[in-house]
Image (cartoon, rainbow, N blue to C red; front, side, top):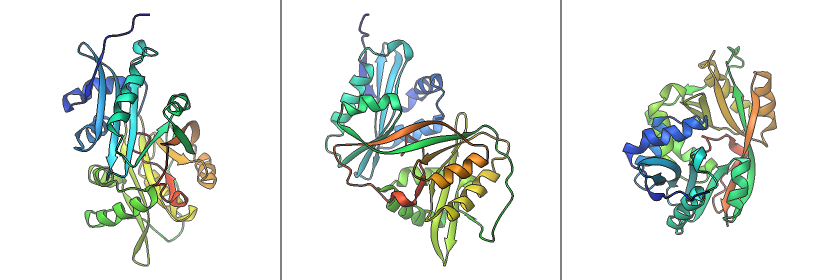
Length: 286
């Protein structure tokens, strides 16, 4: 087998269509908006492998306030796999991230074995739950979520920072501004205690992140978000220790498609508050 002649360079906004071809070929859920969010962040590092003028591989690292660098979108075109492309991309991006306090990612089972070679360690499991066509859900209780407004943005970002472990202003602000109809909060005693955000994906509506103090709060938020998606395909990436949520979602027609492994390199100084983290934003954002 001939080793391909390829170069590594930064991804530019003009490369979005080529990057989309790679994620589309894998059946991934990312949209051009997702790629642009990653590429256009001035402190993010996004690399591609190029053979001639063909994009044959990608990897991204979103910078969360110089606390966590989040690696995602590790893709290699099928015909170029097992030829050193992904290894070169990862080696290059990890070198550029050497000064970061923490490097994390959500790995597929196949990717998990690769990342272990780079000293990544397991943190917890995440279940991908999919519903091909949501049914309408009856309301329950007398506590109702409120739509998130721009005046709530600062408070939602602060709540997410405590739960996730780092400030994610770029991502949280983008989700609320781009998809306000999918952004809900729960307030008790004039304090925000939970939130559910979402976005439209290439194949599914992605619901997450979802934050709450307990399963009761989370069910209220999730039910409201899901009722706006009746008849449409939905995906949620749920922390596997949230067994009550997974069981409830099963009763709504969700099935477990596969899992991810959250991993960190060397050390994990920003674990966040896992108890209140129910659904992640997606493996490319954490």
